[in-house]
Image (cartoon, rainbow, N blue to C red):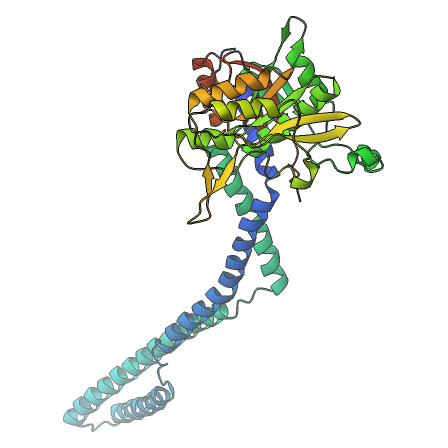
Length: 446
């Protein structure tokens, strides 16, 4: 198995890559609706508040316009000037007809007529300019008032806001998917890991209805879907002739996903008459590495009521391990049994969780790596299959010949995490036997 980073897509590959990103973005309907709702509210506020602000600004511009010129007085002055000009011209015409006209009187009349004609011209020019100015003011005022009268219908505003919200919501989710690509389909995952990909899809309603009528399945958690074809195929992949996996490590970016796959794999193995034990080592790993507790992978998947008494085969192993530990305590809690059918059980080992006497917070059991290794060896001696739920930091605590089942969730697990995980597994010389693609929701315990 050689892990590869995602190759640079070519023309056709780029189209498929973008199509996968678009499908993944479309799967996040809740996020699209959330972002779209915010955009709709913001758009409606803008459609309502911005026109009001614009109306206030336009009203201020209208008020700042200068008043129109008074043309009535100019008309009066023009009529008076024209009458005076007519009178002078009549006088000059009468004087020209008189044979005894006084030259000095003719010169005075000509000067008066020139002054009257000039007054008429200036008054006409002032009247034309005033009329043009008033026309410009009216046109400007009408244009500003027309902009104030713009009113969008409520239905149009709502539809525009919804369309804008949907577009921007999807654009944001698509941008997020392009920034951090997630698993798009089986082919993309197989090309990246170069390992067999097993897809788990949602169980048909008819299968769930049959299961609801079975008394033996009533107490099983919803996550237990061992009748789905993916889990027998996964167990068959791990049980090929001449290459049977006895130790299996289930790794996922989300502990709850690893727990779901490990539970269903263990159920199929138990139905195949293999003594199976499921070890939730996530919490123990955090205690050893960081000194800070984490919630185990099975806490949110299994209700306490479905786990029964201590397994007889595992109890001696735990007691022996506790006696050997340097601190006198084992990192594991007492083994539990999960009934998955008539006379069919899965042994489940959960990490021990202690509480502080002072703060009440969860504390991890104190242990060392040698004690943990010894516990796993003694555990394997009593079972045909040991399934570990771990994260990548538990590299030295599981047997060296442990095979890996890598888990990914459609539209959730990032391609960057897968590439980084494959490189780490290759550096630790771990063999990835199969990749499980979970293509449905994760039902949690109520």
